[in-house]
Amino acid sequence: MQQWQYQVGQDKAQQKNVANMLGKLYSGTNAEVQNAMDYFRNIPGVVGINRTADGVSLSMRDKDGNITTKDVSFKTTKGELVGAEGFIQAGSSLFLGANADPKVAVETALATKGRSFNEGYVGSSSATISTPGQVDVGKVAAIDGAIIEDDATGTADNLNQIFSGTGISFSFNEDTSAFGTTDEIIIKDKAGNQLGTFAVDDKNNLDAIKATVYGELQKITKSAVPNPAPPPRGTQPSGGTQAAGGVDYSTK
Image 1 (cartoon, rainbow, N blue to C red):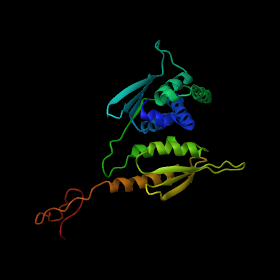
Image 2 (image 1 turned 30 degrees about the vertical axis):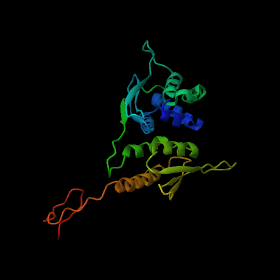
Image 3 (image 1 turned 180 degrees about the horizontal axis):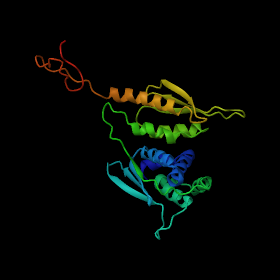
Image 4 (image 1 turned 180 degrees about the vertical axis):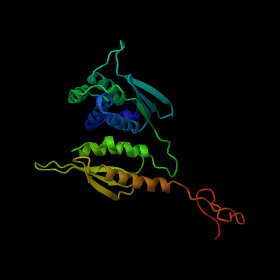
């Protein structure tokens, strides 16, 4: 089993999230399909995902850096469309390995009952090659599909998965009281400082969450850019010429 399969499949809530996203890949609106693709693309180890009218192709990098591609088809060997349950089960086996629970696939398929297969959407989501000073906007875009209304626990799990390795972490306050109405996620930086607390009872705070995360990613990527060393004496550019690295060494 791949390490990323273990990480995704070790929690029942995560299994439901994966199944839910697979359901969106099958019968979601165009926006929901793209959100689901961004969600899967941001699982550690996944470098790209492609969807056509025939199926979904997933490219993964193993611990040795080798990339393999696996397919989950929307159709049978006879070219007939498989049902949502069949697709979700096949996709769950790919993403979760031995951790896949077929009952979760059945429950998710029932929840999509009445929704037709999205035949027209064709698209892809590829891993952004991060360079110093550049924010991975793909991760920020994936927040759209990661937020689960009224489920702070699942939302925090999704976001921690997407932003694994960045230093940004997400915890939750799940209101379980009889009259509770507020479920919140807490965003913290690498040092554990709280950046913000946002309710996820609906998606009204989506833009604020994305802005907070984007701002922190900007700080992280900016700090990753090494300060350029000053040029040797007597070689400073003059006349306002800007040296490599964006630092102006001219004397004005």
